[in-house]
Amino acid sequence: MTGQTEANIQAKRRIRRRYRRLQFFRLLIFLLFLGGIGWGGYRVFLWGSEVYNHYYGMYQAYMARKASHHTEMDEQFENYMNVLLLGVDEGGEEGVPNADSVLLVSLDKGAGRVRVLSIPRGTLMTAGDGTPEKISQIYRVGGPKEAVRAVRSLLGVTIHYYVVINPKILAEIVDAVGGIDLYAEMPMEYNDPAAQLDIHIRQGYQHMDGDTVQKYLRYRSDELGDIGRVQRQRRFVKAMYAKLLQLDTVPKLPQLAKILQARVTTSVEVWDSGQLAAVVQSLSPELPETIMLPGAPQMGDDSIFLPDLPKVRDKIAELFPAPAQGTGTMDGAEP
Image: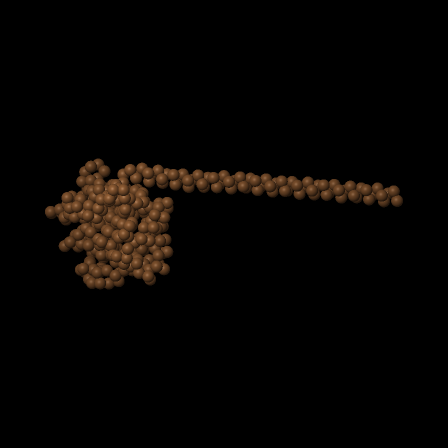
């Protein structure tokens, strides 16, 4: 009997020891689990802090840029959003693009009207070193910011953003909206292997896809030179604007937005999206008013366009009348 009692006592002791070890391991695992959560939470906290600091720093830098550029802005243009649209070529063998098309697109924030001032690519402006140079060459050497500076200096207009589009991106944009209807004023035949440009467009009204449109805009005839190119740009702007206002274009807008976000070079920043959306929603259904920069080709060299400075000043005063005292709206962010 005594032996059985001793055996039972020993068995109970072993059970209690196993139970204590089991409890210890459970406690250890629980503590490790809590430690893991704590460490993981700490890492998540650090990661969240880094993300916050990163984007907060970006936003602060954006606000600093906006504040610095605000000092360069004229009250006269606070009711407008002015965008310099630069259509560039492929750059030829050297790969450095020229500005083929230069358009100042102005959106009236109040009335929703759009005005487009076409600037011939050969327009003489003041380069960074103070010498006269074509705007196409100014862009080639200094890029979009230098082009913005030159146009702003010539026109005396605040430019809030710039957008750069090459022929391939333009073709994608036109194809994304289903093509547009345009009038070719003459048969367009041109071949330039070096520029990889082969143009064959019949005369008359026709529905053009993206590739045809970019060739239509790049064509330069001997008769009208860059003046004819500017006229076609103005037709395209009106046709594209009308296309965007059509109901059947609405389902295609997401694809268009995707192309613009991924492929277009611009000074527009993510922080500007709210302001841009508000302006776009207020756009008028009226077709844009298109104007050509006052001036004329240089005698003996029609590749150079000489702006008529007094008429330029008059035209800018007409397009952007001085605001009444105490008026003003949202600020833009110049690049």
